[in-house]
Image 1 (cartoon, rainbow, N blue to C red):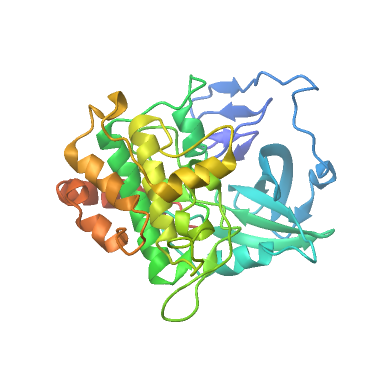
Image 2 (tube, one colour):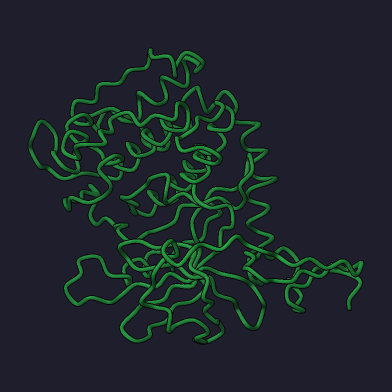
Length: 354
């Protein structure tokens, strides 16, 4: 055995590579110490059911798909996979190809293949098999931001203003990059923001570009009603003053306002758990309550930042440039830049496949 490195099931993990352990995995250290990972298993009734179990062990190009399901949704499911040449663990998003589907996986691939940014998910390869599109992309082992907020609790916890600012600052960088290319994410929410590790100050990454849109024309106007109601800008569903005139890249800025509100207070500003339409109507009115108990500990600058993102009229809503210049961000910009460049960007660069 080499005097350097850590081995997973007798295979060298490799420098700067991240792995996600599965029940029964064995870790061997350079000093001869060995560990076996045991995971408390779900009962048969609790285990996620999959119609794609036949893909376990399938090798496509350089990648082998495992039986480990790490996510699922209306699109299909996400499994863990491994690059058999480099031993790098990746996520494999598997989506069924439907002829009449409005938002094809190919659209997500086309958009992501043009992007390279520390705070945006990277794809390594794609394939098609048995009527499915498979996207091999970064594996972020810290989970999503929603899971991070409900850790050790059944309800969303709030974060400190400092921790929130570090997260929001990174999302702003991602949105600034996307919007400069005329791309709207259109489904920005806690569930689609991933963490490189479940620790304070970790790198955050925007994922799930399944309904992202490359805007055309100088006005960057879109018209399709899409997104998650709780995070959806009012103009997406209703337009301005009830007139459906389309919407712009600023729909993502509204979603960022909802996310910032959630991070600071643990409360969604317009959500009605019993009525999706009422959620949309609450957002259309845009009435914010920034004087409640949850907001007492938040600075005036923090409140101002949220309120300027959650402007019903997108013409009055901040874009990424204005958000970077807002006092809540600009006041700490030097320190934020240091952390961002020395930690989060540096981590991303170290993990790029050479």
